Length: 227
Image (cartoon, rainbow, N blue to C red; front, side, top):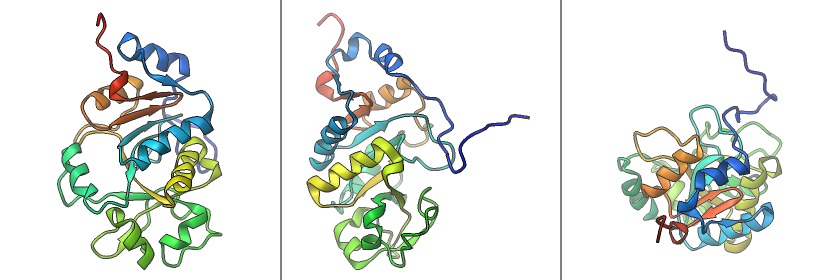
């Protein structure tokens, strides 16, 4: 039988790729990719793209295990546009009835979800429990509120590392505590696992920007060898 040892509560059990492996995956095709080794600078750069309304593919650390994307292999986009759900579903070849879920700063979760208990460190960590959205949340982030007024959030704090820093910087820039978080893949394809998978999804149009720490890749960085 297969036995896996991991920290209690950890779901990040999948493959992890070092910067040298990522650099090798990029090769000459992405030689203009921006490299930012400082996590704070990287998060700031990603937040700028999110605030501009771009879809960002987030590839960071060890891959998550389980049914939900939890920031290490996620697509992030702002949740303030009520029309983004339709356009994102079309982009990812998803059916219209499939809703999107939010990722929210834990420190501001009570602004978004009725009855949120800040002392409960487990509820909401894994995007597996529905909450009633507050009236303010329904108005601010309509793209992640279900028709019945509920939402199925992931909440993050300092323990979530770079993922948290990205949302924190986005909130500082926009005033909004929440983003859409959906799995990094096109519909009916598996969630990306390797750098090769992430680059293929990027080329396939899953996202506008690929944030593959420490590399930030935009369409302008894509160069055909020999040109």
